[in-house]
Figure (cartoon, rainbow, N blue to C red):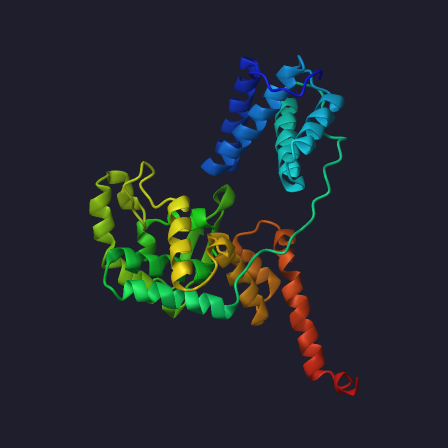
Length: 318
């Protein structure tokens, strides 16, 4: 590959990318956001190959290694480079299974070493402050405030991904739900129990939901718990992120330190701190692999150390 510049990807290569994405959607139930990310990553890869006069059918280990070097030179993080390589591996495996290629050049490429950062989370006191601020908005009686309280209570009570939260079906709010049935990544369903506070917040919100349904004015919005007038028919992740930061200001929390993902991490960390086991937290978070949940082992280690210090007969002798 002679140049680091990008060129228009070959039409044939893009057709193979679209076939790959169709497979991910049909066979693995990949979500729209996942498909968009793969499309961006693979389009960039094909453009880099085209700049060097190569095509995906002929790219070898050297070409792919050079592409990964370009990513590093461009300042992309190790995590992003690792994600790109994962996309390339799956794409090339698809090409082999589809008999486009007889070999997989990514098979013998070692991925960048990923450092696992502890997730940014919130203390229990900070979450209490956040919920109190949301409650003050709900107490005004305005539908937007009632919805905000419901969103925050639900997210902290369940640890849902924000995309799962905003696309909850309307039936999730009917009656007095004790358990949410959530469809997560790959179309996998899981059950997440709801505490009393979250259930009350849902009941209160359902009394104002018609306000948002009428504002949406679209049939597609009726199927969502949180309808919106946007083209998707439901509240967007971005809009909820903005709402959360507004509440953070009201709660005297640095909005830069808060995101929907922070509340998901707080849900997991606080459960583990209070004695939940890692496997149960894995199931409620919807992690397919326990290794993903093991990022929270620092919480378990701190809890175990405290237990030993408190209860071991020799601990007091130090």
